[in-house]
Structures are given as structure tokens and as C-alpha cells.
Amino acid sequence: MGGSERVDPDTGEEALTDLDLILLATVVAQPEDQSSALIGKKGTRRTRVVRGHRRVTSSGIDDARGYGIGDVVPGDATIVSIDKGKVVLQRRGHTELLLLGDPRDETSSGSNQAAPKSAAGAADDGIEKLADDRYAIDQQVIDKLTASPGQLSRLGRVMPHSRGGKLDGYRLAALRHNSLGRKLGLHNGDVVNSINGHELTSMQAALESYTALQEARELDVQITRHNKDKVMHYEIR
Image (cartoon, rainbow, N blue to C red; front, side):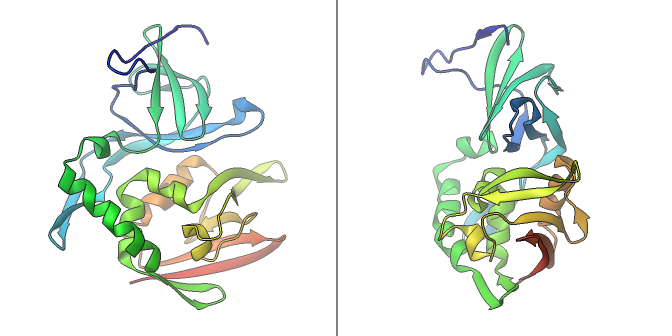
């Protein structure tokens, strides 16, 4: 990898990057050089007031794309490793960390942090099973998922899945019994192939589906379960 580790003088730990970047997701694969990271640049955040609290309704992500080990990201930093929720960058002869989520969430005022925490339980309760493959989702659940990219980790772990040597979607794993993914009717081993007709054949396609959540009123999610195709339908209300 080369280069020395840049250390935070206050904590003594490896320093976080000061580049205006947001790590949206990581996909850790074997061999390691097949791992990928979805990284965007910070854009303008939109907010609205909900029940007296200011809430982020857009993460403000610009020019997001998938990167692999050895790729150069904006700011002339090179990716030297990709791990779960973490990317190690090399810049100016030093290594530094880019962690999952939006760094701006860490600097929000106390009142602004309280809203997402108080909404966590309500968001989980805002899912109603209408039929075996049909669910209703409260808008607040979608707001929480799109407010911070790190919230996507609550769906479980995703791994790239190939069919015939070509990426055809992402396989879900580590879905706990009471996790958000399970409440949405998803199972460990499900492969998510497309969302509203958009095939998930790249990290860029996955990002486009993620950003589309902010405006969608219905979601048709094509999955493969036990080698059989299935469509999960979600109504957003």
C-alpha cells in the first residue's frame, strides 16, 4: 500500500479524511480486489420541519459512482482497501479513513440529532403486511432511510451476485429476525435483481434506485428466492 498512517492528534487514532466525500455503501468480496465502494460528493442538503423538529430529507449527494481498489476518487486520493463500512484512502503519502454515512450528521446540533433517534422505533412500526408479497410503508420509514446513507445497513448485508458470469443483483445476508429487512418480507439469501424495473447490474444502478426512493410512491422489487423469481410490492403512504 505504501505511505504512512495519518493520525488524529486528539485521539491518536487513524485520521478521518477531510475530503468532501460521502461513503454510501461497501460491498466486500473475495478475492479482495473485487470489493467495491459507492462514493459521492457532498451536495446541498434539504430539510423540513416535522412535528417541531428539523429533519434532513435529502442527503445532498452529487456525482456518486462505484469505485474499486486502486481507483482514484475526487481529491486525488487512491483507494487502498475496502472493508465493511470503511474505505482506506492514500493521499499525499498518508493513509486516511472514509467511513460509512454523512460526516455532517456527526456535527449536527443536539436538537437535530434527537429527531432521527426518536423516529427509529416509529419507523420500524410503520410497516404493515397486506399480503405475502405486498406491504404498506409509512413515508417516515423512507425519510429515515434516505436521510442518511448509513441507515441502509439496517436492511442487512449485501453481496454482489452473478449469473452466467455477469452481475445480476445483490444477495442479502445477515438479516436478523427483527431487522428492517425481515419486516419488509425479505429473507436471507434473497437476490434483489431490480427496483421499479431498474436492473441492479452495477453500483451506479443501485445508487439510482436509492435516490429514487425519495420520490417514489410505489416500489416493485424483483427478487430471486430459491431460484424462483418473485416480485415484492410496497405502497408508500
